[in-house]
Length: 149
Image (cartoon, rainbow, N blue to C red; front, side, top):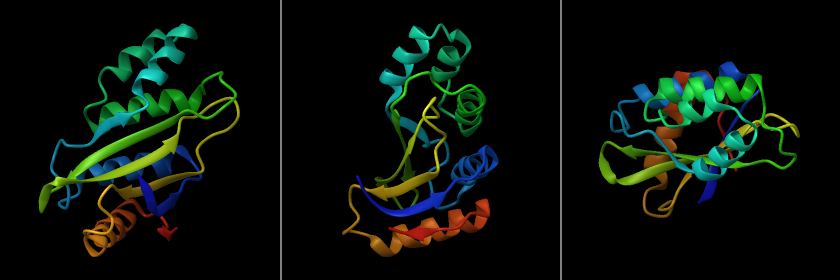
């Protein structure tokens, strides 16, 4: 995924508002927000750290509420690994369900908390205007600043 946009994240509440905006956006297919990449590595690390509650939450991340609960745990108790673990989320675009937007962020670790969420798609060239409108609507709904990368 080539990132075209970025949402700066200062606090967990910024990320929480973004997930809520993604879950309620009329531009996205309801219920399509999902963890797309990084779940296996995250599960391995949570298991290695004996963090069974978060491992269970990882299995229930098919809703914005499930993702919020997982990331709240991770934010309050970051992973012990020193390097960031990249996580990707995807959601389908309502006007064209074969078209997904992708969000990428680093999982909270001992090295630091995420400072931004990158947003893009595999098909940027096909619909840059559509992606721009979706990002602007998400930024407004979540009360976040949208930066073009």
